[in-house]
Image (cartoon, rainbow, N blue to C red; front, top):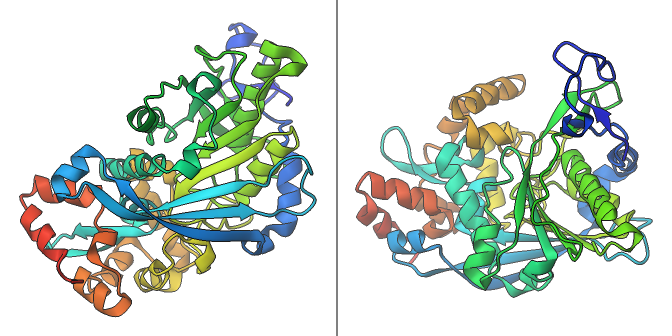
Length: 420
């Protein structure tokens, strides 16, 4: 991977005559990343990617985080694990195909589909994931990944904690707190660090390049075989850049006999396109990939591969029964509207996210208020009667906490009898 120093304010990339910091402290522009070779290859098959995914679903039971168990009175919850294999053409023979695990729980659905919430009239109605923002959304995202890491088929793919290293990518990669469920469920202590990553304008066909600040690798040892990277993935550009930088570090530590063999992406929001790009990029270095995500594998719209809608393809969903519900909630925006708009802002900067959401919806003749009106009649009872979705499937941790804050826990628990 070629490295280029980031421009100072007002400078074009490559124009760095006035920098006073040592080179080792300069941000890296990953202009020669393998992403720019692999992405065009994936682009040629992008429309066919859903058809290259084979899936199977397994019913399991997940323990709830202690706080959720206390609020809901339920120690555990039925969960669906969707295991998908991405079967790309011309795949390197000696590298296993990428595997994606999507965890289907109320918390996972809240991240990518939606949830029940108390609306402005204090009525419990469906809220699309795009409008589920801020700390409440963070709470559900973290809980969904806490649930996912319980399951043997996922953890069995991971090496021991003395052979694993975690990198959280800014600005949302830290939210799942991967280190926490690994400790809670298995008493592992996996070292982690944080990579400050963002896009920077650049003169190339994508109009952008990944910029990475130097990474602190404290705790990394030559024995590491598995890298866990925490970040949601649309195009996959930033994840690929961090992987390449980490691989370079391992080669510095170990020389040609480095042990890295496995890249695990904890990506609560994940597109088939991004999984293909990351998987193929890693495979070119002999590294296999596993992805852990929430509820559904998303689409990814051209030309910039940023906006990522939910698709009406049942085999991409842990819970395909949500498809007609989401179609009713999004109206003409179904399969066109990005699942969360500005992903990072939807968790970190709510006012900005909602402003940008309106701007993105306007070309489709839609708005945030339109989506809210679409959902007025999507109450737990009507959704059960029309779609046979039990209320608890859309009552995540955030809604239980909302009920606790507003003294409505008893009201919420009564809803659980609707489907009985």
